[in-house]
Image (cartoon, rainbow, N blue to C red):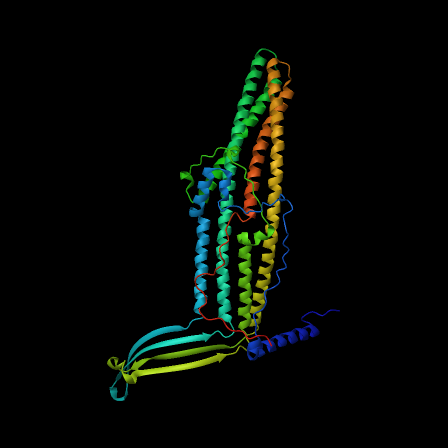
Amino acid sequence: MRLGRFSASGTGVYRARRLARVAALGLAPLLAGCWLRPDPPDLNLDVPGSYVTARKGPDASLPALDWWRSFGSRELTLLMEEAQTANLDIAAAIARIDQADAQVKIANATLLPQLDANFSGTRSRTAALGGISRVSSLYNFNLTASYVLDIWGRNRATLLSEVETAISTRYAKEVVALTTLVTVANAYFNVLDAQDRLRIARENLRAASEILNLIRQRKEAGTASDLELSQQESLVGQQRASIPPLEIIARQNKMALAVLVGRAPEHFILAGGGTNRIRIPRVAPGLPSDLLDQRPDIRQAEANLKSANFSVEAARAAFFPTVQLTGETGFESLALQSLFGPGAWFYTMAASASQPLFHGGALFGQLDLAEGKQLEMLQAYRKSVLAAFSDVEQALIAVQQEALRERYQREVVRASQQAFDISRQRLQQGTLDMVTLTQTQQTLFTAEDVLAQIRLARLQAVVQLYQALGGGWSPPERTPPPAEPTQPPLVVAPQP
């Protein structure tokens, strides 16, 4: 039977492994020339050569930076430009960049000496025998300096980890900006679709009302029954009841757009129009390998992984001795007028080294924590890459199939319109029953409403494809924030 960790045999194995790690780390200072930075974990990425659903051909360009202009809507372009400058989520992401840069400055300070100036003046009175008290003064002005030698690279690894985190916040800001622009586009298209469906509903209501008036005339003439009249009144009521939900969609999306562009809903005016005025652009997906640089979320995951790698280095370096240099110089005197005299000058210098021996497992815990975080970031990076490929494939499928669906639905609308026109003409001639007319009306009304929804789905599929491809975002050169490590890098001896 296999023994657990807390059994007698398991405990012995576990302690042996711990002692081996302690011994290896304890001998590390003696083998400093053999200490190398650990290699990054194997990414093991499966990058396909092409997309399954993409059209074959030489066109492999990526989306333009201003991809929203390809829809041919000036109002959408103005909304996008306003969102980039006034959106509050983007502003908050920029503030997080400032915070990350400040953390870099804090981490960079550990590589530099600390220098402080101090001045103190004391005056004391002490009681003595015979009732005579003694008054004394002491004045001190000094400079203190301290510096921790980063022999094992702990502070430098911490700094580089913060640098990668700051880079990650820049990519995170691009993710927020891309998500915001996609949300603006989808909300705008929702407004246009609601306006299209409202227009269709009102036109259908007008047509149904005209037929209702015609049936009433026939009933007065004795050629129509109460049942036929009630059926048409029910259909008119259904068309009238379909208008308020569409008003809700149109108005609520307008209010959402106002927030996205950083404006009060009461001061936001949107003209809209209809989805038929929007041009459907053709988007070339490029190559799957382009996504590794083009998608800001992948670059963010990559930076997080590198930050975790440096955190592991810092946790390992914590096992090694800490060497600190301190110094103090200044003037000290019993009288203020003689404070800066030649005899008042003093100085002290000291060097100290401390080697961790037993911290109750805290250092091992910190190392395990850093390695666990590293593994988490590795899996997150892998997932972001696979999810990016999947997003593009799904968007390509949606774009392709929604285009076919729209074409087929237009045929349905054309045939339904023709059937409705023939039914209304025969009704006027008195040669058609009301059941057939009601069916042709409902078929036409439904077909037109479905066509408007398909048009919206096609537009949103194109927007989804732009987002999956990185939204036309141009990857900047990968440069760290201004606070670059000021300490020269350690020269690592080759491994024996």
